[in-house]
Length: 157
Image (cartoon, rainbow, N blue to C red; front, side):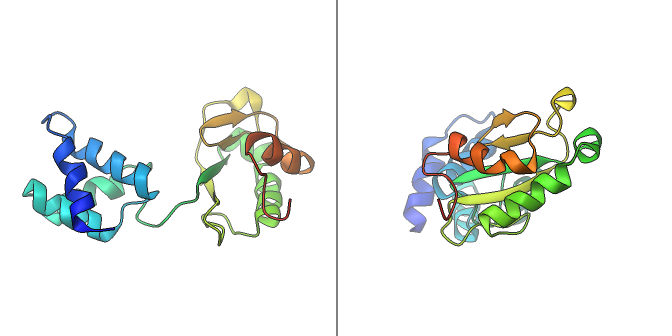
């Protein structure tokens, strides 16, 4: 990646309303995280302090400063999901993917995250895969869930 690639993204977003968010969203979409050099280039191009962009990037949970996987798997750990077995589902996903919660697989294909609440309490426990919510997930259904939701499945398939 070059600074020019980042400044090209900044230059595409000219509307003053939501410009910073739009720029960060495009960078995140393209690189699956917000590289430090991208934040520096955007801050310079926008004539803003780097700390201001960093503040926005760390405020919103949709942004990541670390590389994320091609597929994001989020396990709800809200109260109802927790009571209904979210920890067991997470443990099975960790085992299947070979990565700890909060981590990304070595091949960059999957990131496993814990989320606070997906607002689907009546369907607990729930897992989100690339934004699609899956209900009443059990540890023994994790394998089939990954295979059905993600082309190519999980590592070792």
